[in-house]
Image (cartoon, rainbow, N blue to C red; front, side, top):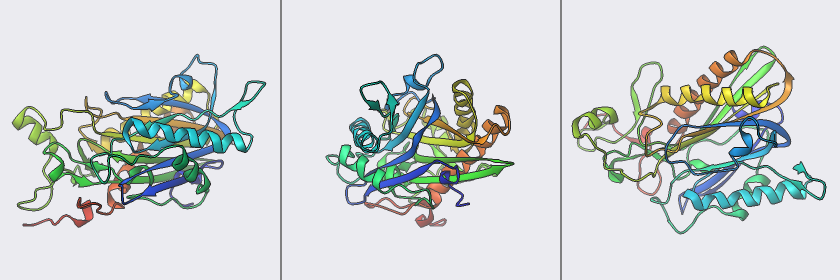
Length: 323
């Protein structure tokens, strides 16, 4: 196992990364189709094709999920993913064509690098060409290239973040997650509550705690919705559409354990869930959802610990602890 979402049979991951412009996108391919669900908890989301994933909708499967930088402009990259899938004969059969179902979510990274360079159809296509079922690059790559956290004191004190992945094995099934972390708040160690990435204390080293600042100043310096944490959970357990949506709901517990505060008015937090069904029925939804929350939290921590500084914004590992 690679401790990544690609440990789930039938799942591939590919990145497109532009470090000069500080943006990129990540595709999670399930070319043969997977039962898909989503739960959006943040109040400033940027998404595409989420309605078909909800219970009572006609389309039951997705063929890929796209996570992208570029703010709402980055949703265009899903067109390139559709082209890749259509060329290979994958999609929802409507008789006259096969229509690939590619839900997507974006994060805001326009403040770093170039605000004029955003992932589009060609970049989405390139991410698909790079996709494999092997180890997944983490940190400042793909959708995490321009990600940052700890925004309450403004961009001059935020910390570079990125993208992380993790997985767990349970009996005959695997549960994995991949998350791009561009949160307004802090990333904390879920066990100790220690802030491992947040608004930087430039004068004395280390990090401030966002919730303490919020209590003191009553309002943030980031009034516009320029943050979000977006991710995908995948499992080979056999789940129906109601069950994958329940797992998506439970997976957000992992986000809340590792990011504080989470699901704010200026975050667009969204988690997708894919069930390939290749591992059989396995455990019940309560157990799968509980483990999904654990792997999401682990992936978030890895996203900041694997990140590297970019365009003048240091990563957590580069922030000194003492002044």
